[in-house]
Length: 77
Ligand SMILES: [Zn+2]
Image (cartoon, rainbow, N blue to C red; front, side, top):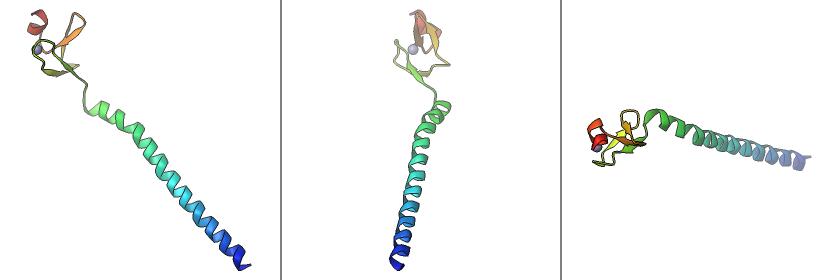
C-alpha cells in the first residue's frame, strides 16, 4: 500500500513538473510571437538614402523612382 502511495506521489510530482515546464515553454513560445510585433510598433523600419547613405524612417523618407531618399533634393540629384 505504501509503495502504491509513493508511486502516485512520484507520478504527481512528475506530472506537476511537466505541467510547469509546459507552461514555461508555452510562455516562451508566446513571447517569441509577441516580441516582433512590439518591435514593429516601437522601432520603425529604416531605409538608406542612395545619395548620402543616411538612414531615415520609411514614413519620413521621400519616395521617388521606386527608391527612398532622405530629402526631395537628393531624389532629384
Ligand atoms: Zn540623402
